[in-house]
Length: 282
Ligand code: C2E
Ligand code: MG
Ligand code: MG
Ligand code: MG
Image (cartoon, rainbow, N blue to C red):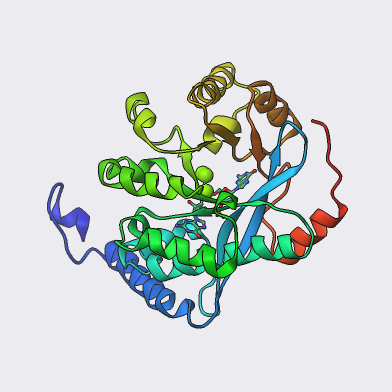
């Protein structure tokens, strides 16, 4: 139909659009019930401290197993959850579960770990976001220093001015703030400097082509250096090989995360890993 209508014409009944639209509506309908039906779980991906070779924390990553749709990747439902504002209750649930998880590890003698939770700007823009976070910390008993909120670079820059005071407030309580997927957005170095963040997560795309490509090597190195010069903790995400790990280590990254260390695991898997883990000098 689109072809017959000719170039530049607006076709509302395009069957491809219609199918995509229907799928989206269907997904949203299922998403709406997923939380109350207990279809979400969280997997935790270990982060390794380069200096001492210890596991220092985890990133919480949501998983959705829908009885009707099967496994749905967060890459395909987070955006829809944001547009429909369902991300507000879903994100709150992730935060609660993740803080409780870190506190359980502590209580069971595994030690204190940082828990990094992905936060949508939609959540951050909520009037009562700060008080919600503080309430969750109080209810779970987790120290604010153990919580890190990850905010994606591309999302924050559009709203940066209104969010700076909020981020400062969270930071003042001891909560850590990470800029996620750094290098894929459009933040200037100037806006980066004004952001109240503690941590920079170098996006996987800069790690991916290490070490074959010369330019990606110097690019990754430069990004790490920028973070370090600004006094930030630098995390390399998506480290998959020994070689990539050696490169980011030499670039003086503080923390490494990726399949090379471990895939994201359910809580039982994390406990198993921590029980058998021996720090390795890397
Ligand atoms: P992200 O925050 O950048 O998380 C890292 C993603 O990379 C995760 O994908 C993780 O499983 C994957 N990953 C980790 N190590 C490796 C590796 O070595 N190689 C490769 N190829 N991939 C690796 P996942 O779990 O599919 O999540 C995708 C994105 O969905 C996340 O990207 C994050 O932006 C979003 N997301 C996940 N959980 C939540 C959540 O609870 N709330 C919100 N707002 N967003 C979430
Ligand atoms: Mg993240
Ligand atoms: Mg990331
Ligand atoms: Mg990423």
